[in-house]
Length: 198
Length: 184
Image 1 (cartoon, each protein chain N blue to C red):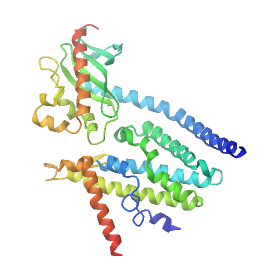
Image 2: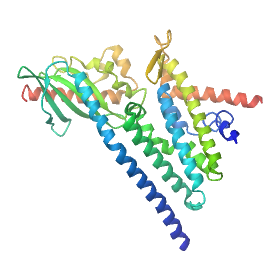
Image 3: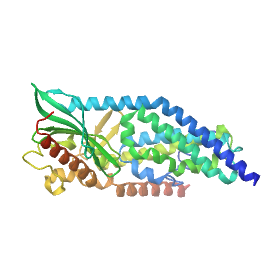
Image 4: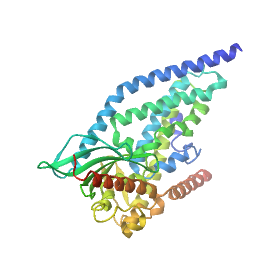
């Protein structure tokens, strides 16, 4: 059972191994705080949609399952958006357009289709948590590398750490979308290499 | 045929439940969202207003100015705080800006936007607005990158559309302040 949780962290990491949800990864990994906020939103939506899709798997007719999943997912995303705007307006302002875009994050639909509609509720929760945490870890790692090299800072909730030396002349390209692709490519190559050695 | 109806009904049930839940959450969060927006504007007003008393809110011209507050010092209007509307890269921009009666920008703050995090979002920081301060009166508002110092031009690269949106709004506000010219 615990394997359903841990597989999402490294072995089947959604970003580095399955390569799902790359658009939000490239877009929100500019700052560590954005990565954490996006990760929290994705974990919540993923766990909730996995629970409901697992519960409803016998109710949802097979030939309209994709629209049904999208309705469930979009509802949770809208809830996250409204709650975030009400109680964490600064985070909401920072994430901007990427919160509604969680709807089209392929990780969520992918897990609904590949896991939640075939399994019971508890494994689905663990799967959602594992995949969500794996996504957040990967996103935070990319954001950390990009923010340190690209801007010379580390922005955490409530404080900003300035990295000496780098902050004087940061590598601006790493902060741009092209830099996200470079960092992601190198990390994916590293994971591939690690996988190949086993 | 019967099968199609069952599918349609099931899908409709899922949508109805979803709509009901969303209406409920909206009912709970909407007042909170309105309150935090009003609070943010109050905070911004107090940051942006350097001196004088803020007067009654006046409706704008329906184009670039949403509404404005005349600020008076000893019975005489010295400056205007305006809510300005513009378009950026990700959608509408709402700015709050303080102008002298001759159109000079005292300070500005980006209130609402949907710009790209790490690029256009930088316009939300107070440092971003420093390059506009003191312009609009004797000096023109910098609306092109070439009108900026090399250092400032570097800071807006990668987010030119945001910069254009912000500067056009401030230019419009500056002209509007000149037109008002000290009236309430």
